[in-house]
Length: 455
Image 1 (cartoon, rainbow, N blue to C red):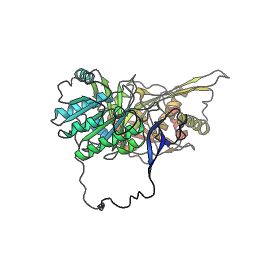
Image 2: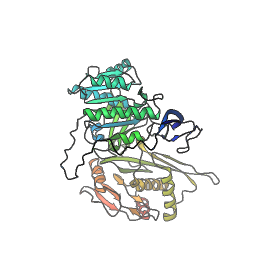
Image 3: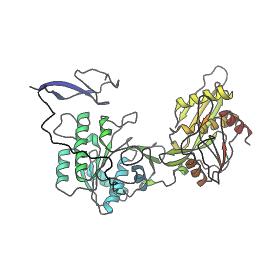
Image 4: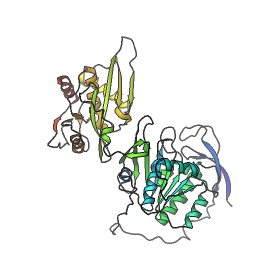
């Protein structure tokens, strides 16, 4: 006979233990263990090797049809998705509170509804009147969206079963959904997992594109069980700083397209506006070059974006502890790069404060930014501007070598479009366009000579 045992589930990582404790043994988070429905322990006589239906297998060489995508009416949203929404797919979108997730999905739902397709928007966090007020403020009051404010998954699926399957179903948010078949409050691991499973099953069976809005934790990861990200087809992060108007929609996982694709939006009074040329957002636009400033052609998925790296060096009195401040880049990588410049080039940063900033609130994770950061640091140290209309990219090794990076030609072509005619980067793996004067650098010591010789 089955025996019931108590179990406590961590709300941060989903690990299960049979006794309560203050700290989770797996993720080291405090006060996250919550008692949930008892687990059932089956005896050995419950054999699953018989009684099921036979599964049919297919071969890999059978023809497969490409999924037919549906445009959302927002080109930047479609770009991040890989070309549009795939019927029957499940998309999980996370982002900080107030970043614009609901606004973006409301605009996409309105565009799909106006095209003649059915769009359903379920809000579990706001009343229907609040969503209508936002829609009128965005100029979407006349969009034929089916709107409801409900948190019961049973009520949602019953209602959807009595109508034609919609082309788009938005659930805002999955952490507010509740199933009466599962014990626990909304937002717990079991509730999030169970509700998401039922909604995804409906989407797969009826060919509905499902978009789930997810809350994020203080470190930026999507709240709830990690299995939620495995259940969906696409995981997207809506990023941006509230002090800046730009927003970046980034695909972290995509079973139907490339990952790390981005869509760029600007927050305006009438909602989110698409930014066709995001490089203009992250460049200062100064006509004259300034000391400590270098332009880096970053690559986000298949899209090159030009960003400006700014550095400031402040000499200190003897005995003071120098400070290192970084905004938009990895502080550990800056420490490594400063060590390389001191060891391989003889530059002295130990008695100076170093400040590094990526303009526009942009965040860099591309290792090819090493050369641009090094050039900005040397320019600030020598108080000499870098050559005008020049871009810098390349990875710097601990030996001081400038290593090749991916898609160098694509980076340079984007720079040419914006009027840059000089490129500096690795010696190999780069086919520069005719309008670009490319000057390869083999070692970081060559960069010192180039910066010191600049006017």
